Amino acid sequence: MAEVNIAETEQEILRAFKLEKKTNAVYFCTEYPSIITQLAIERLIEIALVREIRRFRICLHQSQNEAVQEMIMVMLKPQRIDTLQTISLDNLDRTTSYHLIEGDMLVSSHDDKGIITDTYHLKAHDPSLATSIRLNARKNRSIQVLSDRCIFIETASGPFTDEMTKWWNS
Image (cartoon, rainbow, N blue to C red; front, side, top):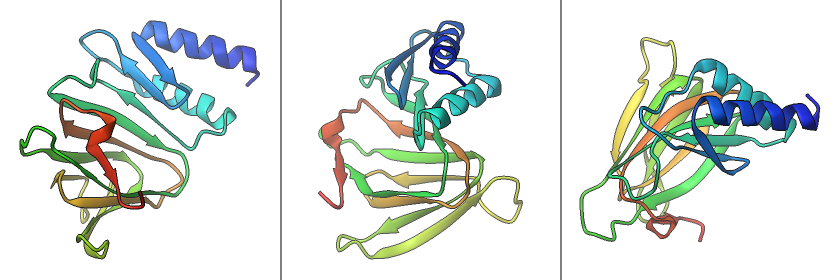
């Protein structure tokens, strides 16, 4: 896909699905209802592969100030999302959920020393394994994507600011 075609295709998707591009890896919906088709995801995957982007997200919420933060997460190769936790600046109980659409991944809980205490295997189209999990967002967690493509919905309590994410390695 030539760079001109990438830009044109991306602009078509942005217009058709009322998306705003924040970066090459982050898109926000700008109107309700937020509607994304499988074809739009596939086109964005094509664009990401040409740009050599290994993951991106489509935020179904319009801003980080909303009470519910809901994102379609697309991972384009096996990879690890480092250990993190969500810090509640307002002392509210917060949760984070992962709902697998396609692929295979592990979600692990970690203690305060970084030791894995539990691991949950999520795999699409396998009736013996989970496809969804909801966690206490204050607990340390990590994700290991096992498949070449992994698409899931992450839902988190909002509002949210970047300062609320505490990365284990920082």
